[in-house]
Amino acid sequence: MIIKDAKGITAEVHLYDDITGLDFVEEYLHAGGLDRDADGTYLVKDARYIDDYATEACNGSNPDFEEPLNAQWEYKELLTMKKRNLTPMDIYQICYSISPNIRAVVYSAKKGALPLWSGELQSMPRVYREAIIDHMFIFADASKISELVFALKRSQP
Image (cartoon, rainbow, N blue to C red; front, side):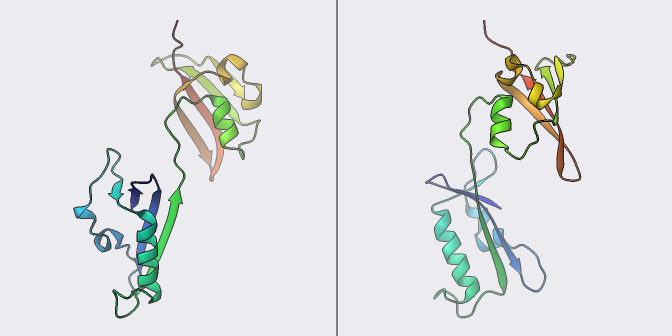
């Protein structure tokens, strides 16, 4: 379950039953009563408070529970990027583990267009490296990125 609070903290949370292994976090947090944003993220008042509360409930130090919950709590804060225009060079710099010799293909955002360029990411012409991405696809083999495909926005005159 993904939660987001008023301070902008976004976290992925799970509460796994020790016996069945089932994740019952939505029931625990009464998710049906929570508002959701356009992406389906559950909106909460304070994500870190929820983390502290559930951690204490599982380890037995929460005074609201007579005994520890028979469950494993998982809380992972997610990095969020402000929406902005990204270029292929931004993607390379953000994903520093991407090899510079990974295969890359560049298209225009127009449907059905032929590739404008293809080759190793490191040899991508500057005009494409600095263009704004409309959308992109990432292809992987055995959890390793093998190819990046960029569709670039049409430049404004």
